[in-house]
Image 1 (cartoon, protein in one colour):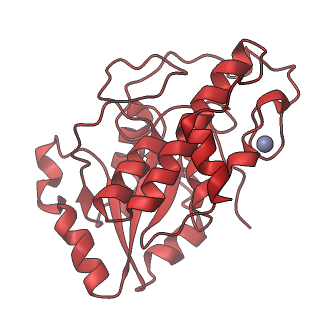
Image 2 (cartoon, rainbow, N blue to C red; image 1 turned 180 degrees about the horizontal axis):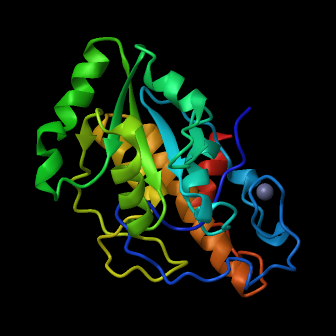
Length: 243
Ligand SMILES: [Zn+2]
């Protein structure tokens, strides 16, 4: 069974956000059990399943769980084969270990290439093409947490230590509006996934995830003002047409 998914902004390249109790705001709001947005601005009508040649496995820091502003869960709404694992340093999920051993998959840890000690593991997008050419499914492992949490997961997970590291090279700036990023170059988890889909040649899945992320931003922002989104946006219309 797929696990319930999580939390707020995040992943691979975010700086540490100030740690606040995630239920400080809106904890009395009635939320949709599926998308966890307030029912007033439920995201579910815009949920469209996309197809992709690649997969995502999220390794989510436990502190990130259940934060409604996390965008990692949006990926599994659009790509139902997405796997979400909670990261525990001393107890790796046996199902994740089994998947890492499965030859059908070619897993890559998505992480910056800014440290010398793992330089020999760093690969480029051509490694993803090579996996596809060899009939293996490329899998992007996203470390879902703040920057500090992601680094901790990367450094302390032995089972990741032999995997190739794929840094995301993009000029895209974040469009995430729910939390202030330290830099517009810090993408949230859903944006990282949309970029990886684009780089892997899955333009349609990338566009759908981007639109869904945009609708999440719009709906969440409206919820904070206790209002429904007034007029359907371009992203909303495009998603509704696909259903
Ligand atoms: Zn919903």
